[in-house]
Amino acid sequence: MEPMKARTLLGALALVVLSLLVWELRWVLLVLFGAVVLAVALDVPISLLRRILPLNRPAALAIVLVGMTLVGWEIANLLLPELIQQVQQLIQLIPDLSRRLAALAADVPWLHDLERQLSSGTYWERLQPLGAQVLGVAGGAANITIQLLLMALLAILMALDPRSHQRLLVAATPAFYRARMGTLLAECRQALGGWLAGMTLSCVVVFLTTWAGLALLHVPLALLSGLVCGLLTFVPTIGPTAATLLPLAVSLLVSPAKVLQVLVLRLVLQNAEAFLLTPVLLKRTVNLLPTVALMAQLCLGALLGLPGLLLALPLVVVLQVLCKELLVRDIMDRWDGH
Image (cartoon, rainbow, N blue to C red):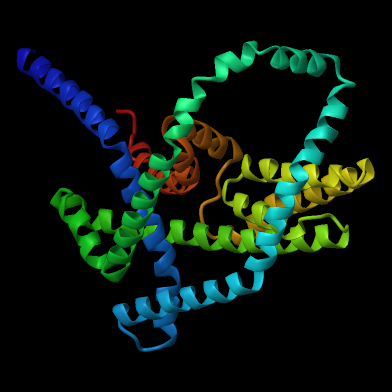
């Protein structure tokens, strides 16, 4: 019994030490996982190009990077001038929007009391320590920039030679499980690549349809609102709802009837994307439950902030495949209860 207790104690101690080490290295692991996601995103067009043309991987990667740069440059030249103009217009509309919201708040008793308390200065004294946090924004932006550059470099290196990285992971597993580990890595890559491709198409469709719908309704800042709605589609459940606030706020400057029209438009597009488009695009990959996706976003967002919120769903895609294959098939299905 004593050797058994000693091994149990050592195992528990090792688990605690490993958990502490993972927590201390959480930002390194986050950058590494983000690089894996980007590498898989690059691998999708690389694999497609290599099936069409007899190219080696470095040449296909170079063509994909050059093509993405050229397409991004053309899109920027086409949309960036109007987008900058609409951002400047939004900055000019903020005072009018504030006055309109203040006028609406005057009709709501508890909002009127909140406005009076804010104007008394008590709350401003409590918010003064936030000034010190604002001073750290520049340093935080520089840190995020370095992390993104490092993430992009790691992604390119992984996409350049993914088999070597796969063999490294397979070699780190016991010999009897290496064949199974290779299969697991292939299934995770397929699920993650399919999810990224489907969500990218969904974002593009949401951007174009929202832009066209707002333009037909003659809502100001249609391009900017459509772009925000498209980008936030990558953050399901939370993103589309938050993205709707911008076109609603802008339409408030036109008329209350326009607000209702924009709300109906966004509800139709959001439900069509969530219940029709996305299930069709992701029917061959992992189908995430809304509750699981929302809980993952809330947990990782609380622990790691915005980077955790953005990488929550790719991580859930991988974990869902691992749970299905490891926990269900390799453990539960073989557990006969004797």
